[in-house]
Length: 343
Image (cartoon, rainbow, N blue to C red; front, side, top):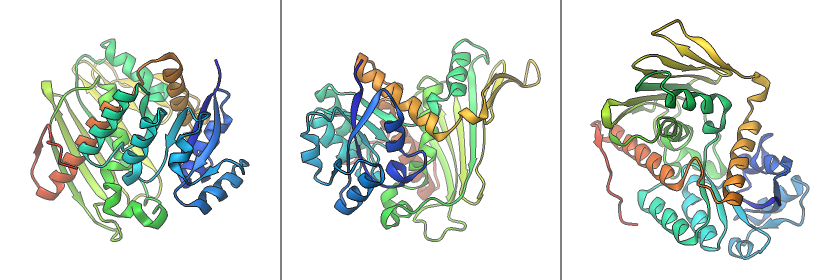
């Protein structure tokens, strides 16, 4: 099978400069080839291309880039507010899309992206690395096999430090979508995926701006999502911890699954929680998760398969984030589905 030829759109830290940047991961993979990189800022595109050792690959004219026959797929790593338009243009040009979360900032824009994807026949995958961890895959299999009985509730609590500002500090403004559209949307996507896409009916949320006054949104939040059948998920995040901390569990009628960094534990009712999966911690890196996600996308493109995280999944997670933002503002629970607002 030939290598899938990518263009990367967005030459910021996540796209290019991080040690585990998307560009570096693609360039390290035998299944992929990075043939072009693009950014709206010509100087940044040129500097990024030279930094990656691809001095002839820089583009700032996005339509001209999309006209290239040797670009088969586009990985969109631009700021949140640009995702939908970047994706729509690429899909309309017949390119497969790996689109970082969130897929859009409004339901109307998400619907536009999905409609263009359907008409184009191209693969659209929303990129979140969590489902591609060996621990996550094992947990989903155990749930499907009935190891915990019927899932009843889950929780994920995440403590981290301040976000990187992004170019022009966009990540601190309302143009980011807020805290539910950064790290928390990974968990919204993940929870729906691992629970086999239950239908959400109501969102409760609370948030407060406690420390980072340059944020346009809260830096501490809690949210609860209620699904059909009595299932619920609880999410919490704060930005006051300089050292990353996370705890997560899925509770069922018969037992529970507990997620640790490199272990998955089963128990809590029939027995004390004991490890059922243990992974070498050194193998659990941002690079390995990104590579697994990209490898899955390539397989979907080349073998005409539906990806694990589709555009419809992206829309569903977006709806939950929008409902949480609304619940924080109104201080009341928000019933679903939301009605898309006119563009």
